[in-house]
Image (cartoon, rainbow, N blue to C red; front, top):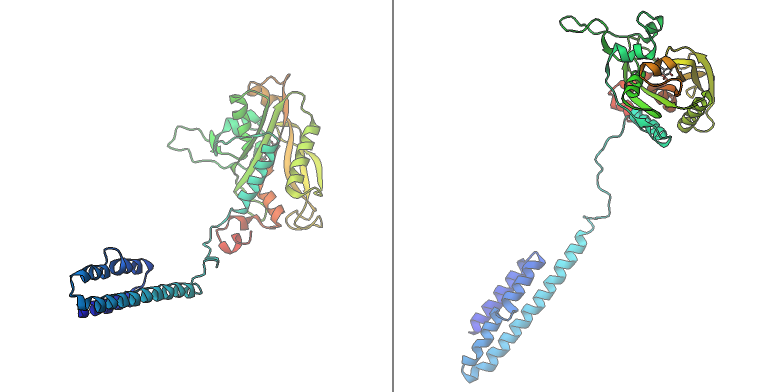
Length: 344
Ligand code: DAH
């Protein structure tokens, strides 16, 4: 028995040495020192021994048990300190490597800002088709067929051969004003609506023109709306976008669907009014064409123009983006080059 006890002790010590986890260490402790453990098996057998051996074997078992206990405790300390020393190599507080999440395109950022300003003013947002009927793009907006004001819209046309459409019956919309008639027809005044969207024109592409561009059309139909309400709205919007010190001026202009028509200009933020290619050396940038809605537009859309009136305006989105970020060439906004996009 003496030999068996010594073997058991050696076996226990060898196993304890090899252990690498707290769980395994605990299991070893249970299997050797637990109530049903191997040491207890020997203790139970002491009763069967001749009287002369009892004391010696009893002492041997006790000594072995102590050695195992001490070795277990030491191993536990060893495991703990090796975990602590590993902490130097695995510091949970060090920030991890960030994966690049990307960000909004500057045009989307500015558009969201514009939408927020108008939501604050109680406007609803409408969305409409990019391929539009001549009726909504022109006719309802008081551009009769053959009217010269159509020329200014630089319309692109589809090849309609082999279709049931007539030439020019449906076109890529030239402005989001095309949604005025659709909204007016479908809903009852009072109305406060903005229409963000893509428009298309046959333009010579240069620093401030593209064949594809974004506009935010807006209009209000209510009772007793005044030109000063329009001025106040434009001023509020432009100062919200460009800061309270933004300089704004108005001039008259012509669009068939408004009377009178006005153009809002913002002092050029690219050159601070000194004159640059972006503002064509004038120091001012035409930013919001607008006007009081022509009664013909209302009555064509079955709104009684004796009771209701209103104003309309448009914001050239890329113009706002370039003035905001001082970009003197719109074309950079539409390149997929990350070296450019990362700068915003
Ligand atoms: N739709 C016009 C254009 O793109 C811009 C415009 C002018 C819109 C006057 C308006 C307005 O709502 O009142 O050329």
